[in-house]
Length: 252
Image 1 (cartoon, rainbow, N blue to C red):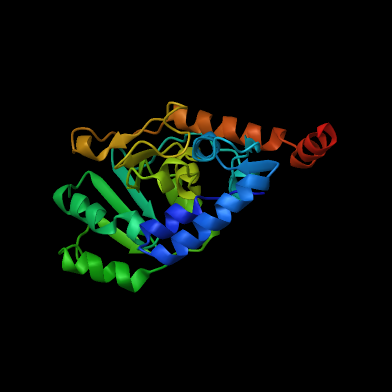
Image 2: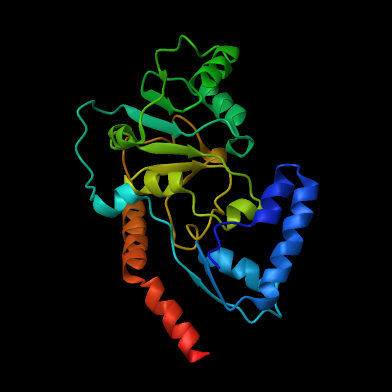
């Protein structure tokens, strides 16, 4: 089975209790008979080992890498705009993104030295939220909707990226595409909880929301974060899933 998430917990978080119970039964049944499971993080594999200790399933992790970064390379450039600090948010307004919290943080830390760029497919909704916080006319906050193949233009400039996930199981086992892309471009994630997938174990650079201040921000990127994503790319490229599965079934 290809395991991309913790479905019962996801529905429980969304307040869909009946669906959560249904998928919990399905999941429990599967893990009684499952031989091989491929999850996206070691944290996810450990979650299932602890949840189903009697299961004989063999679990491996296979990180999901966005196709664009699998063919690209990135080197930290010299910026042409001096010491301006660029902070981005890329995403929509789902509840787990904690958009209201992010906008509150931005509104309290407006500075001529910081440029906030919000990239979203929910453009009108985001503009409404910004207007409610008095940020619609701010010269330091920009909101736009761009094609996926244009995101790199903003990521290459950015030093930080908002990813305000709560400390819950769904996020502890995840490998968010957005976080992978942020780190690939040397950005330092601004986080609510550091426990996202395997990244804390791998020692990633981050800025906790508790420490967010004008003094803490620097116009610099993280070589460490670039290196972490490089190692995940190597792992993804070096894992032959077909060969792994054939060896597993031949050994059984």
